[in-house]
Length: 233
Image (tube, rainbow, N blue to C red):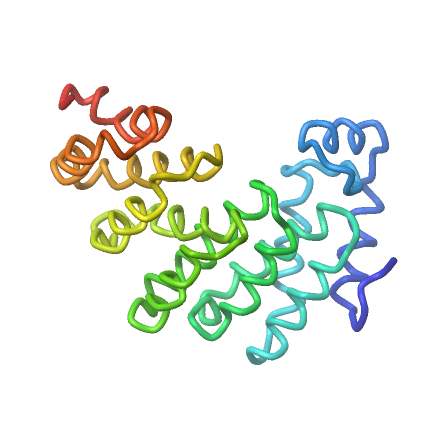
């Protein structure tokens, strides 16, 4: 099944097909625990394709940006979707609140960590940092969403914000999700707190110690790794 509407999808498919490796494709699918097919093209071999993709298909407007990203996302092989994520992040002028519907569609459809973590950190995260006042309500709504991957996104979208982290929102989200038993939520919460601990160790230490009875052992352990390494805990 080919993606509709699209020279960009044809280009990417053709380039991946040139480099396809059936043995590696099976190994990659097994590693990702997925039935979704792979071409068998590993990341170093994808980079030259990405560079050409960015050069040849620079979007003239947001409509083209979203249309091209969706065309790549509709490709049946997983590498096509990886290309969609690269493309979506390659043009930061469009990574903002106006593109959030596209990113949400990808999270819900992708529903696995290799897709969701990239979208959450590099797309939703950048959009949230840029348009915090607009997207805060969306993040609050997502915390209560039935989709676990959407909820995970509300945690790790703060990763890499460093001193610009919305501490109030991060801590509030952690407390709202602290009773969850889902591994990806608990792990994601610890990851987000650990990321923030690099720039705000005292604040994270105070938060995790104050709320240790609410946080799962996994979350606490992940959140405090850097604090322990730094001798602060």
